[in-house]
Length: 174
Image 1: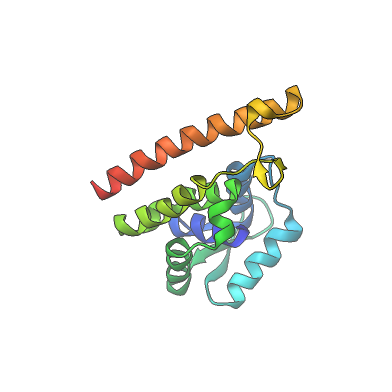
Image 2 (image 1 turned 60 degrees about the vertical axis):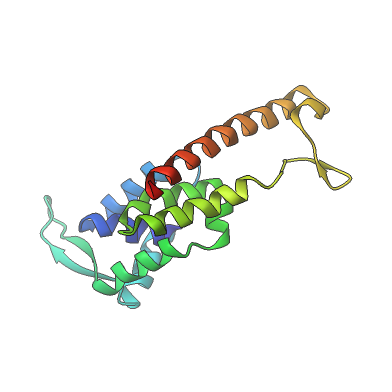
């Protein structure tokens, strides 16, 4: 998801590494903080793969800044990743939010709707944090107040997401 975020933000404009980090932090926040030890090797991999290019500009202080830009191959790669997200990018809520942050870059509304339909299909499969005899436990059947809370919050969030997905897909397929 780090590489997807880098490509997504650079699709919008050229940025220096610190700005990329700040935008990724804003997107993922406290859930998945970004360390320099993860960010800069990811940027280096993207540069080596020809997806991102960098050049140096004078900084506002004494140190020059490395400015990162997306190459045409990087644009193509981002669009491919958005068209065909990995299963974990559909099933994991935080990864899906990262995908969602850049889905507007896909120019084809039908392709956007297809990604949302995958998430919708996933959400329609009965699931729980807890299972008994292979069956998901409902909030009403949870053994304690705290697990009931987890399940009720997840159900409410899921219901709202399903509602939004139906609206968004309807709008895209209009």
